[in-house]
Length: 75
Figure 1 (cartoon, rainbow, N blue to C red):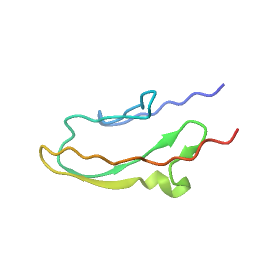
Figure 2 (cartoon, rainbow, N blue to C red):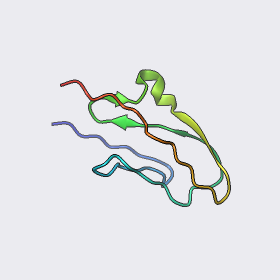
Figure 3 (cartoon, one colour):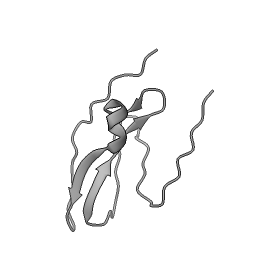
């Protein structure tokens, strides 16, 4: 059994639903890095994935990051 504790200094963290969808609401305008991590497979994009994918949010904008491909974890 494994466990993880992730501590953030902001409210913008999400766990996907059964279909893999997630949402952040009311994120302030700015430049951010979207980081994706799986409990057993690690970071999306390997070690470099820790740096995330740059996204830019503009005021009152909805961003669709599309399908974030993530290989299945090793068995």
